[in-house]
Length: 497
Image 1 (cartoon, rainbow, N blue to C red):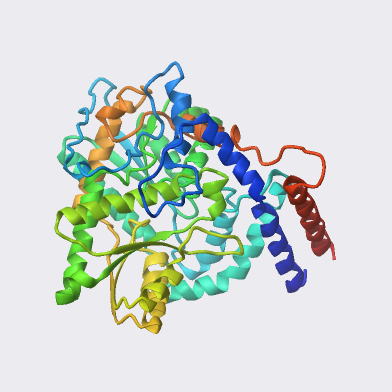
Image 2 (cartoon, helix red, strand yellow):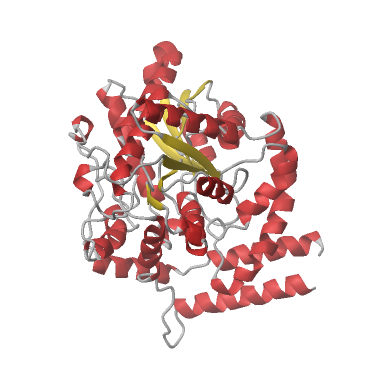
C-alpha cells in the first residue's frame, strides 16, 4: 500500500473511533448524574464540566455495597477528598492474618516493560499498539487492530530507536523493576514475611504470562498483585489486570491461586512522604532561589475520551495525588507554586490538558525562570523521564527562556518508598481468599480478586454509557452516525485502492 494511502487510512480510523457528539457526552453525564448525588469539587484544577470524582467512582462502589458481600469496595484504595487534617491522620490497619495457611507469599509486580535493545523496539511497539486498552477501536473495527498496530509500530520505530539510542540503546525499566522486587523481598523478610516477588511486564520481557508460569512452578498459593502505577488508569493498571483476568479464566491450574489486588496506592502516606523527600532535596539545589522554583508535575497523558467516555479515574486520582504531595510539602514549610501538566501525547485526538510543552512555554512567558520537574506517573526511570523530560522538555524550557532547570528522580528503590510498598503488601494479605474481610476504614488497600475488579469496572462503564439513542429528524445523533459511516466508507476505499 502506498504510504499516503496508509497514512490516510490511519487518520480516518483514528477519527472514526474518537468521534463522539457533544449531545452524547451530555447524555452520558446526565445519566450518571441522575443515579449519583452530585458533589462539587473544591479543586481549582478540576474541570466543572466533568462528572465529579466521587460520583463516577460511586458506580463501582454502589454495586458492591448493595451486593451480598457488603462492605467490599473494589477501589477503596482511592482515598477521600483531602482535608486540612488529613496530613496528621494516623491510618490504622489490621495486622496480617496468620490463619490463611502456610507457605511462601507471592507478590506480582506489574509494569509496562521496555525494549532492552534497539532490535526490540519495533516488536515492543507492536505489542503496545495491539492492546485494545491502548488504542480503543469500536467493536465494528476490532478486527483491524493488528493491521493498525503493525502500521503504527513500523512507522514509529525509526524515531523511537533514535530516542532509545540517546539513553544508551535500550530501556533500563526491567533492571530497575527487578531491583525494586529484590528490595521489596528484603523489606518483607525483615518484617518476618517469607515472600517471593515476581516481575510481570505487559509489553515486553519478562511477560506477565511467563511470570505466572513461574509462580505455578514455585507452588505459590497466595498472591498479592501490585501494579507499579500509583494512579489507576484503564491504559496501565487496567490493561495489566484485564490480561490477568483472561489468563485466570482460561488456565484451570490458576483457579486455586488465592489472590488480591492493590489497584492504586497514590494516597498512601509513605508514598506521599517519599515524594516529598525527593522534591525537597532537589529544591535545595536551587540555593537562594529555591523558594521561587515552580514545582512542575508532569504526568503521562491519556486521551480525553478515556476520562469523559470510559470514566477512567486517572485524572481525578492524579489531581488528588498532587494535592496530597503539595500538602505534605506545605507542612514542611515549602510554599512553592506548582503546575500539573500531561506529557507523551500522540495522534490526532485530544488528550488531557494542559500539555507539558505548552505549560512550560506559558510559565516562561509569565516570567518563571526556575523550574523543578517532577515525573509524577512514574516510579522507574525510563524513556519518558530520561529522554522525553530530560532532553526534549528541557530543550523546550531553555528555548523559552527558563535558565534554571531541575528534575526530581524517579523513586526507583528509594528506601522509604520500598518500605511503604512492603506495608501495602502486608495490609493486603488479609484480603487473600476472603472478599471484603477488612473494611475500608481499617485499611488503605482493597479486597477482591482481579476478575471481580475488572467486571466491576466494565459494568460501571457499560450500563450508563449510552452513546446513541434513535431519534427521528435532523439532530446531533444523526450527524454523528452519518459522519462515522462516511469515514468508514473512506477508510475502505483507502485500503482497497
